[in-house]
Structures are given as C-alpha cells and as structure tokens.
Length: 484
Ligand code: AMP
Ligand code: ZN
Image 1 (cartoon, rainbow, N blue to C red):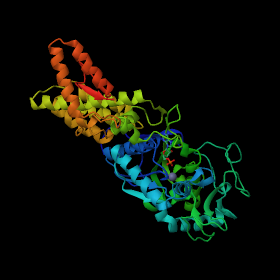
Image 2 (cartoon, rainbow, N blue to C red; image 1 turned 180 degrees about the horizontal axis):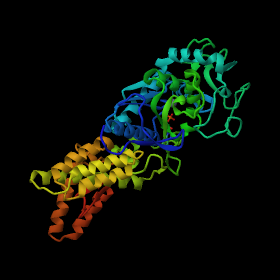
Image 3 (tube, protein in one colour; image 1 turned 120 degrees about the vertical axis):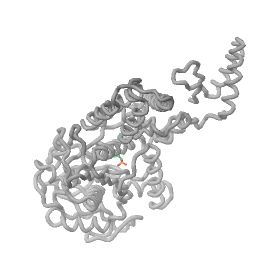
Image 4 (spheres, rainbow, N blue to C red; image 1 turned 90 degrees about the vertical axis):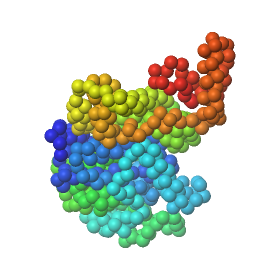
C-alpha cells in the first residue's frame, strides 16, 4: 500500500463518504449487479460497468488484491422490479420464437463484446444465475420459516421481520411507495417474491423443483446468493445503478440480514456488504435510451456512426459517477476529440523522448496528485485533468511523462499507450467511399490549391462532403479529414 491519501468512497447506506477498510486485510471483494440478458445493453447500462471498472482498477492501483464478481441474470427478472409483469427473458423468447437459452446466450455475448470494446477488465468471475439455483433453494430454505410465507403464487419475504428495511432507499416500510402491486394476499406492500411458482396448467422454459413447488427464483434472491457464495458475507463493496438503491438492493439487504442472522443496519456490515455504491444515470432527452424505442442507444450504434467506443468511455469519465450525465452527440464528439488529442500528445511525447529531450518537472508528482483525486471517491474528471497535464506540460521529461501516463491509464483505461490515430478514425457504416479514394481526392485538391485553382479545389471538397468526409484544413489536431 502507498502512503498517499487513503481511499474514501461514498456509501449509499450511510449517505456519507467513508474511508475504505477492507474486511480481509489487503484484499477488496466487490460484487456488481450485472445485466438481465433479454436484450442488448444500452449505453446507460454500460455506464454502470465503466463505473465498476474504475472502482476495481482504483482498488488494484491502491494495492488491494481485487476479487470482482459480476452476475448475469438469465432468469427471474420481471418486467417490473416489484414483482409485477412477466419474466423479461420468457417474454423475449416468446417474441422472437427462440428458446430462452438462445436468447440468454446471444445477449450475454453481445454484452461481453461491449465490455471488451469499452476496455472494462474481466472480473474474477461472471456468475450466471441459472447455475446457482440449487444454492438459491438452500438459501431460501434457511430463511423461509422465520422470514417468509407462502401464497398461491410463490414464497414471499415478509419485510417486517428484519430491522430497518428500506434504510438504503430511505423509504418508509409501511406506506409511501407508489408501486404497482398486483399480488393478492401479501402481508406488507413491500414484501417480495423469493420463489415464483409456475401457475397451474402452465409451464415455463426455465423452471426447477423446490419445496414451494415448481418454479423459478426471484431476482433479488439471485444476487444475495451469488454474492454471498463467491465473496462470503460480509464482503467489501456492492455496486449497481442508482435505480437499484430503491428496490433491488433493499431486498437483497433484507435477505442477507435474514440469512446472516444480523440485526439493524446501524452497523453497515449487517447488510451483507460494508459499502453500497451506486452510479447515477446517463440520460437522453429524446427517449433513445428506451429499449422499446426501435433504434436505441447501444454501443454498436455509436460505432456505426463513426465514434470509437473509448470515446464513450471518455465521456463517462468526464462526469463524476454520482452525477447525472446527459448524452448528446456533440458531447460524444467532444469526448472523441479529447481522446484524439491525448493519443496525439503521447505520439509527440514519444518523438521528443526519441530525440532525447528532457525537462526538470517530476512526473511522479503528477501521479501522486492523480492518486489523491482518485482516492477522493473516484474523481475521474480531476483525474483526466491530471492526465491532460502529463500529456501537455513540456517541462516534464517526455520519457518520464510516457511512463507516468501508463500508470494513470492503468486506472482510467483509455488505452493511451496503444491506441493510434488510425484506430480512432472509424468509418461510419453509411459511408461508401474508400480511404484510398479519400486520400487520392485530397492529393488532387492539394495540387489544385498549390496551383491556386480554387474552383477545382472547392469542387473536390464538395465531392468529399457529399460522401460524408469532412475536410479539415489547418486542423490543429493534424487530422486532414474525418468521416462523419
Ligand atoms: P439491467 O440490465 O436493467 O438490470 O441494468 C443493468 C445496470 O444498468 C444496472 O446496474 C442498472 O442500475 C444500470 N442502469 C440502467 N439504466 C441506466 C442508465 N440510464 N444510466 C446508468 N445506469 C443505468
Ligand atoms: Zn443484483
């Protein structure tokens, strides 16, 4: 461990910044609620994993041995978080006339492709919900007698049997939440399904035998079981998007309390994890984030339009994870330009290092500042500002600056030491012109300009514009053209 500022993180459970004290000295055990694989993730979903990745990389940078688990929910998540509606996967399978297993596999792979494209590190384990059903049944058996009751539709958790239900959400246990609640016979409005029985006369593609009849586990049960199984209670940090602070995580906490026989939540460890962290939402005004909106904002759409996926990562890092982030194409374009500047900056530093140029500033001071800002609840906007300095301050010896950028980028994950300008110049899918044609036309145009034949030069420029190529005369970035 280094002598720099201790790591401080915002705990949603206490609504406070708290120093990180690992449960197991030198280790950090983190569980992240993963996707429900019934559709492609939208870029907002991916913000949740970029955030969890930054947390994991920061913990590694601070010297902790990280065990990170992300789950894949392939059963049990209903179309409404509060026990209402259909199973999202059953519904998608019916709509696509495919087996639920095919749906799950297809969208899990699509999600993993986005994980890779965003340079999110692989967790120690991806836990797949359907692989943990026997453990879920055991867990439910252990808490059923004291904390649950059976209805025709399944086994329900009685939230009045644990202390401080809803502390995380800051919600009242009695009333106060206006959720649609179609389940007749529940003791408390906020009680939730642990096990959902298959209705008589129906069969589901995914169902298992249990002491409460054939059926499927509830979504909240899955995360309690997978986190506890792999990381052990209490573990260090549990993450998810801010919507999970309201229903999913309070339900997980209630189950964990029941399972661990812990009491009230004044002691955070009683919840099953010491720190609960939530990223705020990516928002978009025109509704393109909604998966039911036809062409919705998924990472592939950004790539198809000519934006490198790491430009989206840059966009995420430019905001603090606890702030709402508004998506716009202009904002994404600006993030891409910033990434290009950094990539070119590294190229220039390497050239200067090659020429043996020096400087008298200490690059490690910048790394120290970087560590301090990241230790302050993962302040990535400030971290990027330090990176800008490392790239741009000419008094830092260039070879030291490159080494320091490597250290900083191990946390920010922008691939600055390997990305090239060519990597960043992605062709929009709609463009038909080839790179060779662009270069040839630009060469003709250069000749025309040299000959002061501006009419021809303008015509060639118009021709390129019609093909979606933006010609950038005197571009300070040194980019001659851009497809976009
Ligand atoms: P889901 O697959 O719906 O369970 O969501 C996967 C993750 O994305 C969860 O952690 C959600 O809280 C998170 N999430 C959903 N929508 C957004 C959004 N617009 N911005 C950021 N995170 C989101
Ligand atoms: Zn979860």
